[in-house]
Amino acid sequence: MSSLGAEIREQFPILHQEVNGHPLVYLDNGASSQRPRSVIEAIKRYYELDHSNVHRGVHTLGSRATDAYEGARDKVAAFLNAKFREEIIFTRGTTTALNLVAFSYARSVCREGDEIVLTPMEHHSNLIPWQQVAKATGATLKYIPLQPDGSITLEDAEKTITERTKIVSVVYVSNVLGVTNPVKELAAIAHRNGAVMVVDGAQSTPHLKVDVQDLDCDFYAFSGHKMCGPTGIGALYGKKTLLDNMEPIEFGGEMIDRVDLYESTFKELPYKFEGGTPIIAGAVGLGAAIDFLTEVGMDRIHAHDTHLAKIAYEQLSQIEGLTIYGPRDNRTGLVTFNLKEIHAHDVATVIDQEGIAIRAGHHCCQPLMRWLNVNATARASFYLYNTEQEVELLVRALRNTEQFFESIG
Ligand code: PMP
Image 1 (cartoon, rainbow, N blue to C red):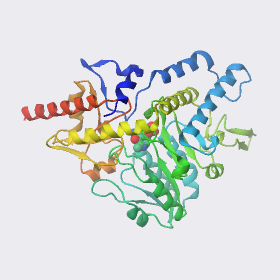
Image 2 (image 1 turned 135 degrees about the vertical axis):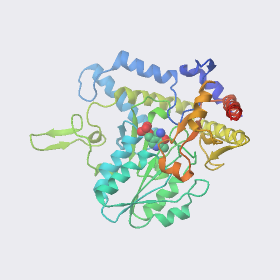
Image 3 (image 1 turned 120 degrees about the vertical axis):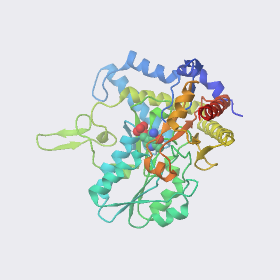
Image 4 (image 1 turned 120 degrees about the horizontal axis):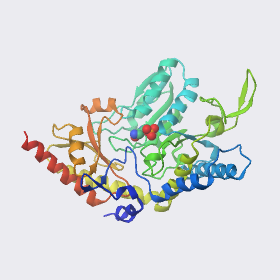
């Protein structure tokens, strides 16, 4: 039993509406979460009172906006337990953060014959950038194989990661299987082999306490919009020693030191990676989201989201003909499934008529879909404002869907 959802949902204005004549049941948090009033207010207040461009203005609004933006960086650094604030680079989200690692770091260190190690459960954002690096450098992609339940083992990781490996990049929490991968142990294996460890934290940062120093990962990427923050903002954490030696990949205003007609020099960390006017209001909103999540408590959020996924797993497995993907245990906040032969899109469309929002499709994980031998799956993903009652509504709606399709043959 977890009371968090009932307690907290009052703070999320969007949840208090009817969709197709039913109270909205929002279970698509893996794609994007909703925002509490405090985040919406922080962005509104920023635009109403403080907005200006940052870093250059000598006027009052300029310094207020700079304080707000840089204050958000401090919040992200504390939230991830980064050692230095300049280890936090604001990006558009996880995708941009991973591309920064691929195109700045990996492009310069990988050579023909080097290896980049991934898993088959990676989101396209943590797959295609590495394919591009492999094409450009002659490096080879290798995959830690999946167990029948979709998890990976450290024994397999030990076999796959070798002295030729330059980069290991793995998702912390899978957006399809819900499984939490042992990224701390993978980082240790990577380091023993002289490789760096990159973590796709898109689905972990919203749900569990992240400590990049404890994980000892070299890079960590996440998106604000999945953790109560605005869209269009996320961050890359990178160890200072690595970031210091990396070249920018975007060039222009803000990131320069001195510009001459034929040559330019660039700023120190983190600014050399933040070309152009930064995502100021986004960072302010992300900072407010971090305050909100911290006040609720990441341990409590984790316990709640895990509990909802567990009861959803148990109740959905009672439905005849419903297949759940991924391991039974160790799942963080989501359940992915198919109902008999009914297409996942049809399932999602039918239950939307009852006001229930779930995701259907390949979830940007086409190779994993092929491994699962399906074209698409349905996914219910939970967050701190969801309740046990909403899980029951989902289960009831799926039972009705199954009966409806049965009746029409
Ligand atoms: N990795 C994972 C595991 C994800 O779930 C997502 C978002 N669906 C991403 C990466 C990409 O995040 P974004 O679209 O915010 O860049």
